Image (tube, rainbow over all chains, first blue to last red; front, side, top):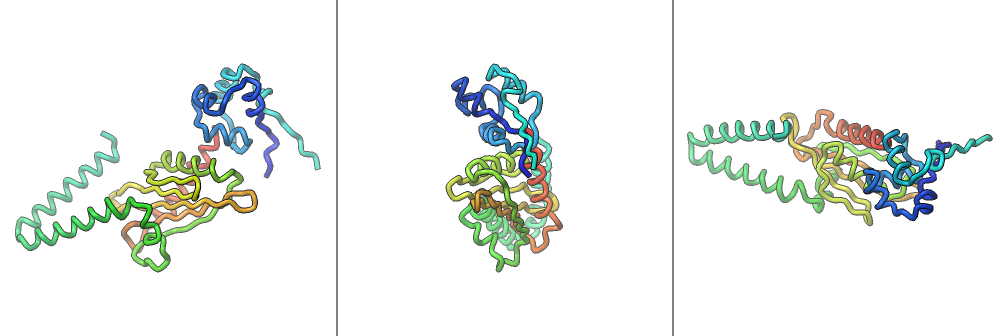
Amino acid sequence: MEMAIIVNLDVMMAKRKMSLTELSERVGVSNVNLSILKQSKGKAIRFSTLEAICKVLDCQPGDILEYKCDDR
Amino acid sequence: MKKGKASNLIFFIVYMAAIMFISAKSQQTFYIIGAVMGCLLFFSVFVRGNFYFKPYFTSRYNIFTSKVKHQKEFDLPKDILVDKMAEVLSEAGFKVRHADKVSGDLFATSKATMSSWGENIYIKLHEENGTTKVDFCSVCIFGIISWGKNERNYEHMMETFENSLII
């Protein structure tokens, strides 16, 4: 089942010119978990993780998370 | 001292005390027991923990080691999944001995307990039609019957993997 929540982490990382390794170190989440999150393959995201990402990337949760309605 | 290490140490001390008591009665017994212990030690150090001996442990013709195999499909790239599986194996309490992104091979071992000599976990990842197939094999290093331990290893690993997807 395709997830309707899209994670636009790579877009924000490109805007802030930050690599995945640097983001991983600053947020305190492993590279592999951030990669999974980036590809929208995670099951859920903790508020603490979301807060840390928003703090490091200086953005809002809505900048990272997007809902795509799949009407068929 | 961690709980697991303390119980292993107590088990070892009791075992050594029993061996010394038995072997004190006869020199021949002492040599036999020493030879058996030497073989077990050699097996544990050089054979059990070495990925090279995977064909021996996972062979279907090896009836002396009980094994359980499962296959599962994941919608993740192989190189990410190798790192993720290594992380999950560590979190699940297994000791990762070998992880190769190119071949997609992972090898981990579980600790010996009072009910089991320990198990070897072999994981093979290969990409197929855009998804990654994971072949999991848990094999007892000694024992024709695993008493469900192999199956529990698989279930524990999968449960840890599912929980780890909450980032």
